[in-house]
Length: 318
Length: 203
Image: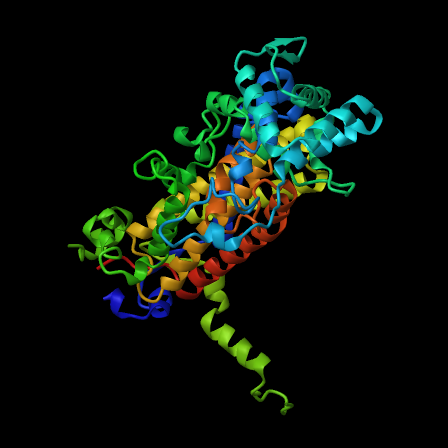
């Protein structure tokens, strides 16, 4: 019986062999796969929907942009309260009981959203704009309580904002220097200057988009676009691509959990999904050692189809 | 340690060579005969996966050589990007078919568990490699995949070190470290298969 022999013996000895050409097989596989890939690339191309920029966001939806900037200054955005690795907040920290690797890891990508997203870019613009410099000074000299009142009032007013020629206008109210500052920020954004200012970090070359992506994600504009492209989390977004192109379909199981309770109902859903997938991956890795899992192939006789020639010749199949 | 010509030595090099010759003789490494039961399409899945990986790497090398702007701004770059995109799709389709085929053949039998385990690790590392590729596309999908993924990565505590919002980091991992890891693992996997041969039928 073959199973009684060592693997090497079964491979080389005691088993009838047939001619085989390994390199020819690889060459044919490469040729056929290339034809398929060439055909798919030629007829279907590949997805390349342009990315959202701060500029395109501020031009398409200046009210959302201004509302988000107001939230960043007020400390009420998602980023403001996110937590590690960006800041000391707790709003997006995920824990299961005492297990909280996010907290344990701590802050490593410090994001100071009022200064990084709003104040510092405005200060750059204020270098030749004394009126803006004065507004920034007035804002920074105000008490935290006064700033909060301005932001709350402006946030309420922005719900009924109107847009004319890209500029946001709201009903009169006590908003302090906030509307003027954010109007200037929106102008910077609409010209494209803010895209560059958010990337600046005292280096000429830039490749880290953490700050602009966090800022854009705090608004509602990109979520709407993502929903249209079925990319949001509750739309199986991680395994999708824009348009009708296949995405990372191999992530189907990972993405599935996000559609099901309790994963999509608890605040620690991401951590739970990661732990479940880690466990399932470990099980897949250890299949050869786990009774039951390693026996399933014997119970589902697909192998009889695969080796039908062998069973027909030996009549040894059960 | 020297020895007379033709006499075996106890050097590490000679021992390694003898071990290699014993465990992986040329007729196993490049066989021209196979057991007669190797006659199903299921055996094609693995070799097509390797073929697709070769096209993934070659198209990726061209993309990397010309740089990120090329695949957005020129028709030639766009076409090579499409080749890369579809070769990745073919690679994963056949890798998954290969995985399930080997599972239902219980291919870890008779000392082949390491082959299975290296295959699973290869699958996992390939997923990370593809993920960093999707993050490196520099388009809307890349942006939103990064935004979606950051919370899961951050929840594990590695977000500060594996920052999906950092294009430079993701691109570097995608074009250098992860391809080397996948290629090395595939190489090990193939060596394991060639050392032990294909698994015999279930009795």
